[in-house]
Length: 79
Image 1 (cartoon, one colour):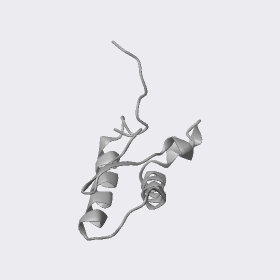
Image 2 (image 1 turned 45 degrees about the vertical axis):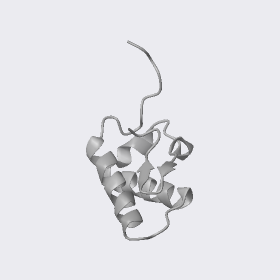
Image 3 (image 1 turned 30 degrees about the horizontal axis):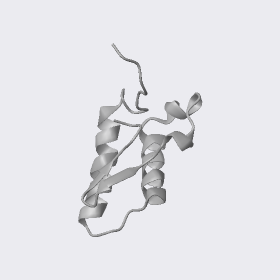
């Protein structure tokens, strides 16, 4: 069944949900969220919730955000 890239948070859907909910909540409140801000929120959430993922070969450059629509932020490489 095909290969392809697997998201960092594939094994941690609750953390991906928390990050998504945080980013969407900030967006819904009217706050502008840039990729730098979103990346910082993602990394901080992961450091608190699943710090062990930083023990291996994980690199923060793997964390990327892609805004497809103003009302939706997609967590690329996570989901």
